[in-house]
Length: 392
Image 1: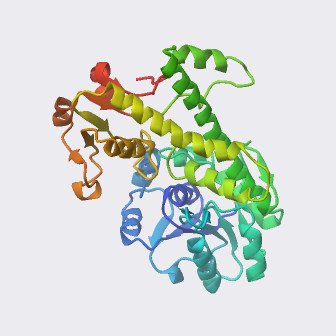
Image 2: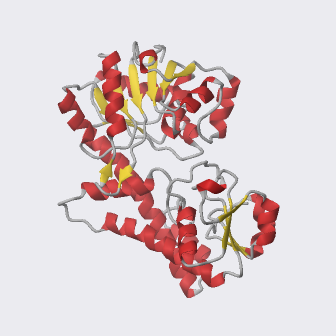
Image 3: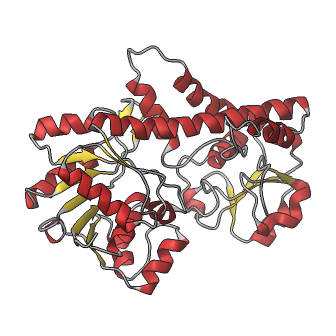
């Protein structure tokens, strides 16, 4: 693609930050965020999230990216506006809180009447269509992202597919802009209606959650029966219809996307017969309870929880399965200490937080970790983990 665009990106979390860096390699990108520290980080050449590949590109300084706090300096003149602000799941109302997305759309339109607005935030099925009707604005659509925490830029450079919920020339141009900015010139583009694009996102993540839950329940069965879980999973996955990948047991699925996306899809099923998605949500709860019970059964005097991040390479502790395990252990009266250098004692009340790894390892009898890493490899004899296929 020879044409260069001006792109405005609202939100500098995993999705917005990775898209900003991806597109700024070929286009002018101006990012907007209400968090001053994030804006200052980007303008100083640093990523707002943990992502080594992103940091490398930013430090090289060969991209056209700047960040602003004032929307009047971001949206005017943009050809595309990407909305990548949080949509947390409201457990009381049983749907995503889309207020931040709605605010960005209205603010962008205040300063720019012609830009093609693309929502990248995860939203309920039907949201885009309702906004189009409410605002009488059809230069507005949804495009799902399929990113892993810690590898967000890599996944944008090597997309599995590009989906845009619109059939217009603008939608095609946006999809081709993403493809041309990637390192996969043959990646397939799918243009759909907005409702279908929203459903693709929710069903994709719910399928992944279901697969995780399946292998976690297989693991629970194997633990309870004293079986070699690795052999069972290997044998099951030799069937090409099942295949390898996404089969390593864990304490449960967590992070930004899978917990809220499965719950939102479940909410969208209201008045439609269903069992499976509800079972996936319930299975994740029962898995964490089962794991906590197994830990307590094996514990000595002191249980040490090693890291609360969602997974290796991530700086996210939101909806971490390990954090939920910790809460179970504390509720059962277990003597627990935590090693998590990213937290302060004030952020983890009622639990002893140890910042020095050597002290932590000396104190604990059982070392609990969702995913192994090299720093605790020599303590494998007293580690509790379900990380069966760890390559370390």
